[in-house]
Length: 301
Image (tube, rainbow, N blue to C red; front, side, top):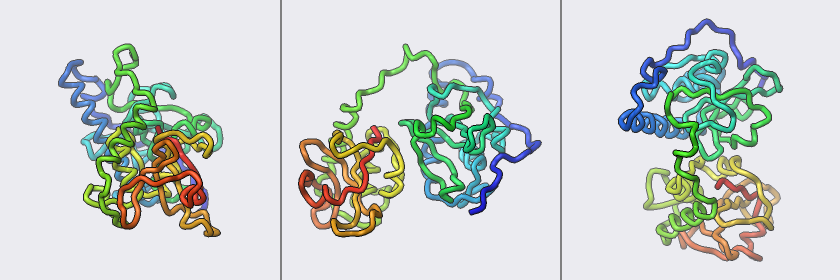
């Protein structure tokens, strides 16, 4: 695909909801509204993962870089700008380390101070953006793009506080991993079905299972195993921790490293996953064909 100029000169004014810009009255009702909007923005952005990239496309099946944000916010009744240049000046500027779900994040592909692509931060060190290079809406690790970061803007004014003293402390990663495993155990024996819908818990395929149990622990993952393998931090086998995602190829003898299966490392040399006749189950990992099929391991907690 020919490289296109993602930053378009435009005179389109940034139209922002007055109530959001002014912040409204600080109180319980306002806070609930803002939290609800954050959640909706995240859910909508996540639902668009896998849609096609198309320069300047406005959705709902294809999206340009800025247009993905424009469309997402429009679904919750908020009108924002339609170009990267305008959106990078919209709302309130926030620091790279202070981003919250729903914030717009901007990056430069060539190291300049002018953003050339952008996305929506959804929490857990992840952001969604429409990628020209991958020709699709994708989910990426925010920290892995730190060197390309240009700015971040908060459209949902008052969606969070910069005063961490009043914030709920983050749970330790080990606690979240334990919750993921506990979430998975309650589905033990649930039947396996290839291509199972992500909206059901009556059946799972390997990636809908991991997506479900991580979602119940507050972590958003893409739908299929190959997409899931693009997020989080890569780790080696010797550094495996409970809650890590293990991605595997089709068989030990396969010459291709194409990912066909994902499992959750449960600790003590075991994995929690779903396949074939047993459905959701524990399997021994160390020294087995499961281990020999490993292509990569990612940590998303």
